[in-house]
Length: 362
Ligand SMILES: NC(=O)c1ccc[n+]([C@@H]2O[C@H](COP(=O)([O-])OP(=O)(O)OC[C@H]3O[C@@H](n4cnc5c(N)ncnc54)[C@H](O)[C@@H]3O)[C@@H](O)[C@H]2O)c1
Image (cartoon, rainbow, N blue to C red; front, side, top):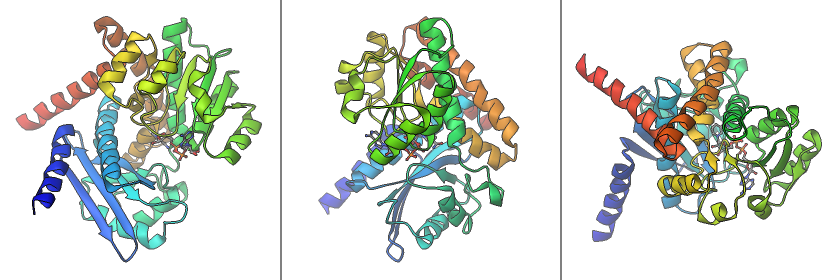
């Protein structure tokens, strides 16, 4: 009895600590589905966030991930000016072997039961095909294939936003946003990473790449004339920019100590292992950090356009705003001598507070 109650208390404590509204645990033995849906905040609109499928070592690890990721979505939508709240979901399992139509449709039925409070899209380990299965059960899904009326793969827009975020940082550090002659390390050359490598190589940037998938590493290296690097060597490289495009928490005590980069700007969510501590450490080391949720919003913008019916032109316009939004955050960080992540959080929180106020008055 006491064991159980302490587990319940600790889960609810975790929700309170990050300000979550709701978490739904999905368990369907018939299809093997084990998922957690987290709704962080819905002040600005329905909570939209991708579904990640990952082989988590434990349920506690999966819960921690979904809580951190869903909070990030609230901030991402807020700073991007979208009328969306923040949510995220994780499915526990191996995306290469553990998926089936039945599992995805079962998961879709859990989303349906949330009556529009949560809307999903792809993330690491899920594809447009999975979104198509979810769509068979609920309309609360985006990122479905273009052939059935969706906005398709969000990754090119995410990569474009990251590229513009890099340019905004380069302008700050080097006085011009021309990228030719600069060097960038792209960690993780999956959907977003590959598009980013292409954009950078088109600008004659020297690009180093690393990925745990050796076959993919060699393929991308050949295709774009990028330079493969062993995973454990990247943090000591003498390059201008580090672009994390794999998983989170790669900016931590150990890696910061080795870094000689001038800029960190990539697509991975939650790059700082500890926002406060590592945001400050980067400020002290004079490494300019582009807040991840600000510059990787292109994919969310694409989903928003699908939801609202705005179309590609609007997606491109909103994605292009990322350059100026990044410059604004850098300006605020310099003026107040605070980490860029803190500046971005302040702008996002202010928008949420302002809209909460008008919604409560009439
Ligand atoms: N796809 C989007 O539109 C989008 C939008 C916003 C944020 N993101 C974030 O960007 C990141 C990349 O997304 P994606 O869609 O390209 O995912 P992906 O799964 O297509 O690619 C991730 C790549 O990282 C590699 N990888 C994993 N661990 C690694 C490690 N330790 N070192 C080097 N490589 C490693 C994988 O092998 C894979 O090739 C994720 O963190 C995701 O949450 C993606």
